[in-house]
Length: 79
View 1: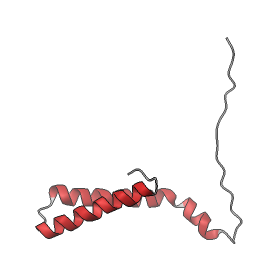
View 2: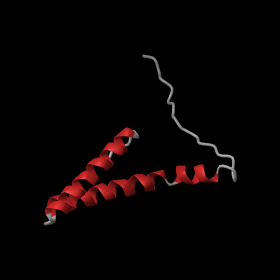
View 3: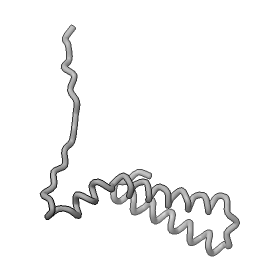
């Protein structure tokens, strides 16, 4: 039986600071952006499901939630 070596994969992002500070900050905060987008979606979901919203408000929230999902999908983001 052949023994397989144990490889670990890693990814390294490199930035030339301070010139690329904005890109560095964006990469560092990516998970916070993802969580924020997910929380917005969950808030909209809760409002649509559990709140007694006026019909116009319900429709507007539904449109916004669908648009959030559409934009996320276009950018290869899974909520």
